[in-house]
Length: 144
Image 1 (cartoon, rainbow, N blue to C red):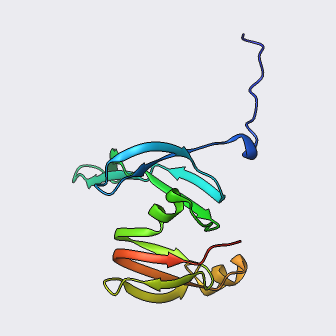
Image 2 (spheres, rainbow, N blue to C red):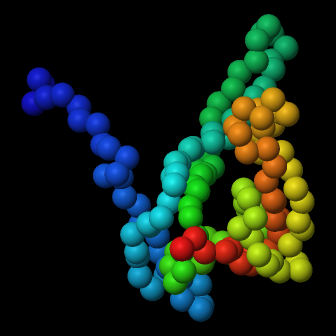
Image 3 (cartoon, helix red, strand yellow):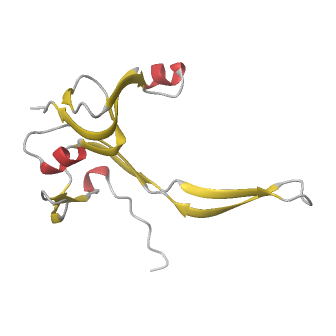
């Protein structure tokens, strides 16, 4: 076992599952997530920093993690996972292009640069994204 090499998992072999909620927000079944163009997870550590009077440098500790999932997908018809992900609960949804065809009036709608800087937006090749914030639903046009 000590001489065994680590094997890489190809992108096509990576699978994820999503709990599809019923009308009461209870998970009724887990389904494989399909039609995703990207899917990544980050831990986003929460730190606590302090400066003591007897030290020149500050000390910091990790006090927790806020797990974040980042994904992109092509919206296909009759996919309950994509339908649920397109709903927003006190959060934000960024849509590149004109795929959002309707949204709840409870959502705040803005158009923003896709990158943090103008150069970053130009380098990504995207430029502008539609941003929906708040609680509500966004109806996305399906890709056939």
